[in-house]
Amino acid sequence: MDSLIRTRMRTRRALLTLVFALAALLAGCGVQTVIVPEAERATRAAPAETAAFPRTLTDGAGNEVTIPQKPERIVSLTLGTDEILLSLVAPERVRAVTYLASDSIWTNVSEIAQQVEHTVQSDPEQIIALEPDLVLAATYNNPDHVQLLRDAGIPVVVVLLFDSIDRVADNIRFVAHLTGDEERAEALIAAMAARLEKVEALVAEAETKPRVLFYSSFGSSAGKGSTFSDIVRRAGGINLGDEALESPFGEISLEKIVELNPDVIITDEFAPEDNAKWQESFSNHPALANVNAKRNGMIYTVPARHLSTVSHHIVEGVYDVARLLHPDLVE
Image (cartoon, rainbow, N blue to C red; front, side):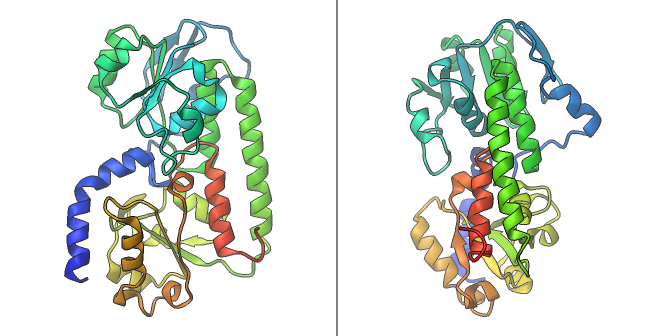
């Protein structure tokens, strides 16, 4: 690996954790993904019948939370809940979303997010001042901040991040139970399931499954237990990160990429410096000269908002990848 690449990796490593958190998984790379045993999932999903408020439930962190009435001043502290929330409820019921919600690179709801009056990071004082009647957090939010909000009498619900597309439906139902919008949730889930069924049927006709590797500008990749791996499988490919990494996400060297020799390399569209310059530098790196993906012109960039989402919009990531792997089958 030349000195330029080494320098880039060192300077970006400090930002790696932040970017994974903002993307809430590289759609696959989930931040602190919590795998919930099947026996526990039933207690964390919305009940089959819609109950009136108040509603008491157990959240993703094991806390019992009571929501006294249908929330009308909701604050979201994660990109994932930004997307789910703004697809379930009218924006006037949302008091604040994350400061990245209006950024079209990261989210699929950027336009509607601009209708929300406030944006937040994690400052408890700022959030308390908004007088929310429900706060949606994730397992990676600062637990001390979450406790301060609870001490102020605000219902805070921790929503789990999952490792597969199937679990996305669980999250949508869970959030809908918090907001009282179950009917809308089922419509979103049904639409997502129908599109997934269609694309999986199309790629099932393929004679081969291309070998795919994700590589980010931070020198990282996505392995087994990531939603990216699930995206590739459903798109009719094989994710090489499953065998290259011991965890859902981690660093991977150029030497390892050469050894794996992927048929397709997928990169993200974010670099802390100049993304276009990074894409050119990576795709033209001499070390990749004999890698199948380079030789066949199959190094692609997929929108980050489709790969990093943990909402129903993840189906767009499946279609993006399926079109690259099987352009003759998927339009």
